[in-house]
Structure formats: structure tokens, C-alpha cells
Length: 427
Image (cartoon, rainbow, N blue to C red; front, side):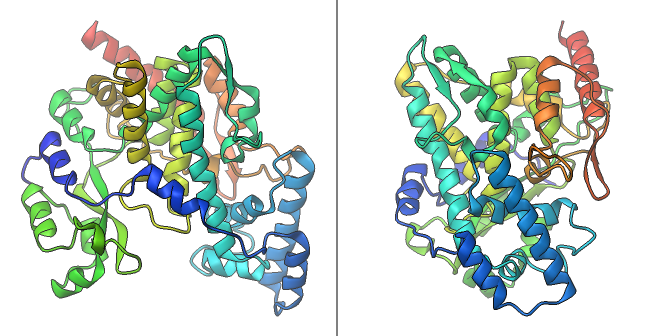
């Protein structure tokens, strides 16, 4: 593998087509629903669906999810409940009914009487609420309180626990934005810079840190050169190979060619080593920058999950482009940088899976926000751990359903130990 330099790769990526947040917001505002989220529509649609044991079980669980959503919280939106069901399948808590390999998300929703198009449009609108909130928050004045809600007083991404937090004045807004940007940049070409800067892990061994990029690719050009999606995702690509992919038109640089379904987003692997643990990253951000920054990091992680569930493609890496948008807006407003490259590299280094002590754990956001199976209040899995992380309390394994357990106690222990070792090296 030829050594890669972060700045050189970033310069290459400047040629690649990306969707701007403002452009995406304009497209999303024009989308309308087919009405399939209405409870009566769902009930009628279910009557038209042939019933077998699996379909009956899915519909029963779906009704239970709707009941919990509508009875337990203000955000009783049917569309979000429609999204939660396939998310739960992925997180393993429907192991007793079906596995993701047996039925697609769209098919699961169809059997429950829901149009997957409406669900994707709804998720896309949730994503765009983040842009609106950022624009409003950056204009906040000292002494004011900013809630993590949309213009209709609903929590961002409908995360119930967010109602417990208010951002008090500009200092808190800055902390939230910083946490979001640090988390988004943890999955970026800054990993190359971190690898060059630190060289060794906290035990003194060569640092193992992988990386990939999300870019738009032209499927027609891939076919011409006999290149598969699997090759792009699994094989390492150095700077010379990236330049070749751009020259051949496989990685799209011309906006007029960036049209679905000819052009789609895909992951291109650069270095095939361990990545960054999401829960380790936002636990470290909480320890280093505080709970408000932690909330920003959690929502950046949410955006990274939901970017694949939207109706319209966002070309490029959505969280990364939002982070750039935040940085540009913040600098326009304050004439100050929100984060430094050193801060980004430090977050990457401290949350690297292959650092010491090793921690091979990275939990999907859909695991963290799924319903507890028997929670009467419809609370989500992250509600209690959030309080624990904020207070520095140690949790043991958090069972999320099925066979999956999130080792939060272990995550905290690893972060604390890494901080001790890092302080010893830099102190």
C-alpha cells in the first residue's frame, strides 16, 4: 500500500460532485407523502395483504410499536414508528420473527401496510430539520435558551431524551456544534493525518487505523472497466488509483452525470485496517468537551445512520458536508475556527478500535434508539446510558434485545485508561 497524505486526498476529493445542504433542503421541501402513514390507511392496507405466520407476527409487533409511540410521547408520528420496525429487525430484537436476510426493509414495511417511499421521505425531512436548527442556533445570543427541537416543537430525530436538555447561550451552542463537527470528522481523511502524527498506539505498537470515503460513482463507467461495487468497497485504493478512478469517470466529478439511478453513492476503501468506535468517540468527546458536545456527537452519529434511509440520494458524505457547512457558517458569524485539526486527530486517535486497550465495538445508532421491549414509557436504550455517561458513571453491559449487548462499562473503562496513558505521554 502506497503511503497516503490526508491533504493530497482532500484535494482530490474537491473535484468530486457533492450535494450541498442548501440544495438538498430545497429538493426535500418539494416532496409530499402518499398518505400511507395514516393509521386508517395502514389498517385498510393490512386487510389486503395475504396473511401467513410471519406477516401476522410482524403486523402484531408493528401495532405494538405504534401503540407505544402514540401513548408514551408527544412524538407519536406514525412514519417514525414505520421506520423503527425495520431498524429493530437490523438490531436483532425481532430475531424471533424474521432476519434481515430473509426479507428486505421495503418488504417488511409492505407486509405491515406501510409505503416505504413515505418512510424514506419522512426520514429525509428529519435530516433536513438539522440544517434548519443549525441556521437558527448559530444566530443565538448570549442568555437565551435553545432547545433541540424543530419549528413545530418536536425533538430532533424525535429522540425523546433530548427534551431534558437546553442550550444556554452562545457557549453551549458552540459546544454542541463542536461535538457534531468532531464526530463527523472522525470518519474522514483526517484519519490519514492522525496515522502520520501518532504513528504508534498507546502501547507503543504501530498504529492500525483504516479509512474509506463515500463518493458518487457512475455504474455505466464501472461496467465499461469491469469494476464491481465489491472491489471498490473491499480492496485498498491508493492516491494513484483514486486519480485513475476519477480520470475514467467512475468517481463522478461532473454534476450533469450525477443522476440516480446511473450514479449512486458508494464506499471506496483506502486502508483496510480497524476503524473508529462510534460509542468510544462520543464517550471521549463527553469526557473531553462535556455533555453538550456529547449531544452534538450523538446527533452526528444519528445523521450518519439515517443518510442511507432517505428518499433522494445525497452525493458525498452527508455528515461530513454538514460539518463543513457548520464550520463555514460559524466562521462567517464569529471569525473563529470551531475546531482545530489537532483536536480532530486526537478524537480519532483516542477512539481508534486498534488502540490500547483494544476495543472492537461500534454500535449502530438504530441499536441505541430502539424501544426497550418491556418499557412501559416507550423509553429508548440510550436514555439511561446518556445520563450515566454525562455523570461519568460506569454501566455494565446494556442488553438491547436478541443476543446483542452493548458493553458501555467496558467503553468507559477503555476511554478512562486511554486518557491516563495519553496524559502520561503528553503531560
